[in-house]
Amino acid sequence: MAQQLHLPAGSAARDGFDLVVTPESAGWGFSSLRTLTLPPGGERTFSTGRDEVLVLPLSGSARVEVDGEVLELAGRASVFEGVTDFAYVGRDSDLTVSSAAGAVLSFPGARARRRLPFRYGPASGVPVELRGAGQCSRQVNNFATPQAFETDKLIACEVLTPAGNWSSYPPHRHDRTSDVESELEEVYYFEFRGLGPAGTPRLDDGVGYQRVYGEAERPVDVLEEVRSGDVVLIPHGWHGPSMASPAYDMYYLNVMAGPADERAWRICDDPAHGWVRSTWEGVPVDPRLPLYGAPAAADAPA
Image (cartoon, rainbow, N blue to C red; front, top):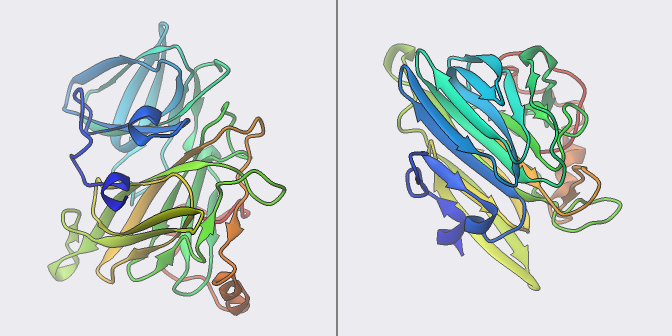
């Protein structure tokens, strides 16, 4: 199971993309993710098919064209250096992305029913939130959560965890439809940043760990070392913690979608660990946060 759900960097490259996760390759119904490196002056055209997608720069800037309409994305230097703007592209669209200076782009996606219009998501409209406390502190950029941006099915956010901290804690799940839980498949895509000698930034060999576990009737068991470009797929089960090693800040992109008509993000804590929330009262958020941006109101745990 762990080998199927942990995709090391490069292992799911296909058709010129650095990463391709589709509902079919994941063995589920809705969530998808691609990443693409464009060299300076590079261009790529592809069809969204039945999926709605976002064009989310991980680094660099990009031009996005759909049906003769063009959006210019300012992007960012890296996922650790700022909130980015993004573009929404509906299902059944042909899109072209290009970059004069080069860029690394991600395409979070979901199998969609409706074809919504091509449009721009400004960086200034992304709610930045601080969750947890102490060593469970993390920053969440809620760029495409239900309250922040309209899509048909897709829910997506970014989580930044300072070195040595635990994210996605307490462990939680969202694999059933109820008043307190939404059925959502989830993709985690990781990147890391560390500091070398004399504070020199290092982006090459960071490491963290991801835990996913299930119940007797729905087993799943993942405990994987993750590095930049790695992906963990979560079809169901409790997930967390996402652990950043002491030497490296951790970033992950969360992509979620599910079958319910309501686009909602409701989670249920593992009762064996949920009590930890009661210990956070009066404990400050890690002073290293936010890494950038101004925190807004809370949305949902990640």
